Length: 204
Image (cartoon, rainbow, N blue to C red; front, side, top):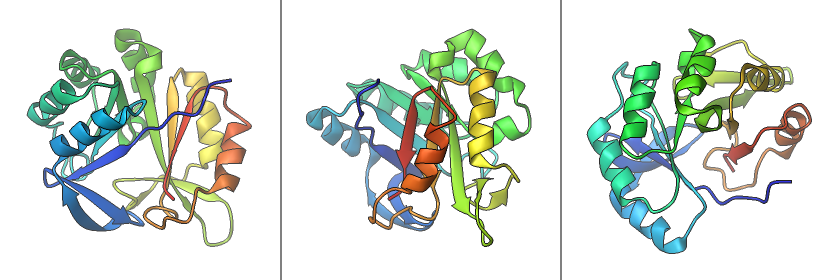
């Protein structure tokens, strides 16, 4: 059994570090580089950096920012935001990043998971599932900062992703985001029952 890991997630918006509530009301909380330095001192297990603007704005990852963060980071770093191709993933890896997080791109082309895994290693391919409760019960996966429904059930989809070869799944609860009330353990438990790969939980 894998031991628990402490993995801070840094949300980058307009080049600044922000925190949100239900994926909205973004509040500036500092500079990403300074945050990396703080977590270096705290000796966290890993760091995740998500550019929440890249996909929404339909632009490429900010390679200059990624290189600066990776150069400062003393622990393994995972980057997500705007990654749509294997070539982009390879370029990001060349900058010193250990893992690539993808989300909306897989809903256009699920084969991206396998193709990316062949180039950078399946253990380095992470899929982020932004999940929200449905009004009449159950859950649904969203993309584009919680604005776009996918019609996917996160439990069933997580099992499908494991079969496709993804190395890790990140479950991000939109309902719990910024609430400081704890994780959605019901959702976590349901997904943990159907997958065996590492799972990281955000929101709460």
